[in-house]
Length: 328
Image 1 (cartoon, helix red, strand yellow):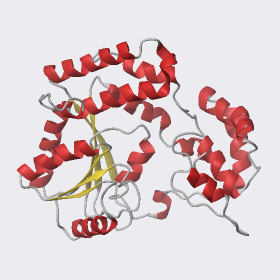
Image 2 (cartoon, rainbow, N blue to C red):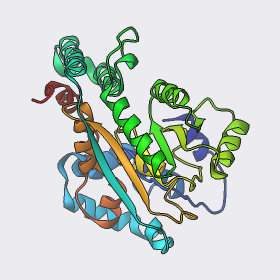
Image 3 (cartoon, one colour):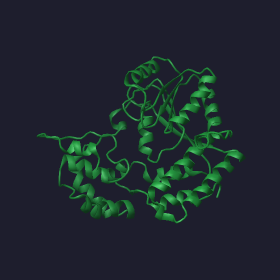
Image 4 (cartoon, helix red, strand yellow):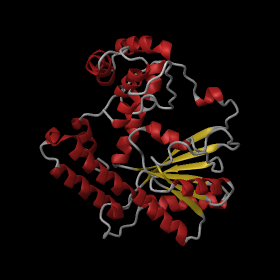
């Protein structure tokens, strides 16, 4: 349905090939669209595909439907994972750092959650967009109250955790990539690093291409102990092996996007073990998102190599993420 997809379908050629790191990032409809380009008609119409495969697999974990789909697409897929190709890649360690809100910050978050429930009274009728807007507010509150109400000055447990981690990494002469999906969250981190006179590079979606390249080259040459990057702007196309630590300040819905970002450091040319920290605030929407990761991680793996499969969340399921109170 996108302009990009329509433009791709209009390309003419005697031979077609697709290269992709994430053939299924969110749902099976993305796989259908790829095959619509590379082998039109193989998976039928979108309606027929949803009926035969997407709905049974995503919603009901139908193993037989998954097996049938794998049999259809298998002859057209050549899959190579990073570990198969890069035998000498150093180990990767992933650690979740649980953040505990203070009493005032927790009370602020809970008030937002209650307000969200009041705003969404009526349940599913509000639809995805209204629910996602409230979820976004809660996710931002997990990072810093300023991201929701700029005039409120509460201590941020997540910022304090980052300060502690940053100082420890500096003392031990490590360099780190720091990802957040919120540019204004990165602004708060910049304020801390600047005040502490800690050198860093910076990149978000508005960074001009020449400046982007200059910052990457400078970091690789040793200029900067931290590299602050917005998640979507830095998820692909960057080689930042000067860092041996990666810090995800806030969890994204799809773990594949976070994995792509972490791979900016854990890639060809990296000589040191890489450690990935994920900061997750206890008793909040962030814990719910991490629980979803366990169901959703490597959706492509589930289809291409077997296993269960998760699907998109309904409005009712999204609403359920808000309903559970802090520490409840």
